[in-house]
Length: 332
Image (tube, rainbow, N blue to C red):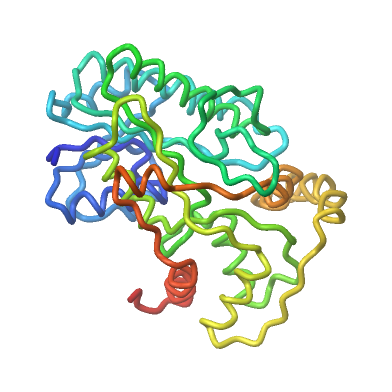
């Protein structure tokens, strides 16, 4: 096992969980964090934090000073937005930032790079088809700026691997679980539901993976992933209605579960997005988020299971732990 890891995006939900997993295995972990990032306060003890920005190559000098030929870089830095017009930030972070990381990995001759892509970079197949790792990565084949920029960045990594860099890619599905301090979409929905402030959810569903399982999959990829290969780190497909029902059960609640049909949600979403933007509220209910819930969310993690020993836990266990965390109880 590599003993020194450099993790970008380490203050994020997945990056922080990866850092904790590496520390538990006795590794030395250097974490790249943005200046004044409030989430850096949740980094596990033992991580060496380094200020920098993947979009600014010069700012990465201090981070890569810790790189040796026996080091592994895990590139998690990214931004997630379901906005209809997210601007250029996705491209700058995912594409330009990944290009900077690839350049410095080659310059410092690191032994391994693992890039954290997303299942959203995988071209959607008709419903009823279980999707595997893509043969073609193209922004033209996916929907939304997040997915397009992830596809472009993943293609850059694969091209670098073809050129001799020891680089592998993982494609996590929607990450959920305890410890989501930034309150991603599902965590926000669960929190609102548990507090009685969610009058309506949206029908549809997707594949959701426990962030702890995704982190184990990333570390396994660092250890055993083949150069130029990608591995889907999926969990279990679940309808939003069923997620809320399980949350009710594990919290001993009796809250009603009401879901808006997808067709109606699609009509309302543009107006609600504009309302949220005017109020300065976080964007969760947008045309893009509705399209994701309506899409084919069936993914195969067979390649990761065979090569990496990847095995996601039951969704009910993840939701139980998440509910307990949201309620302020001790995670089991």
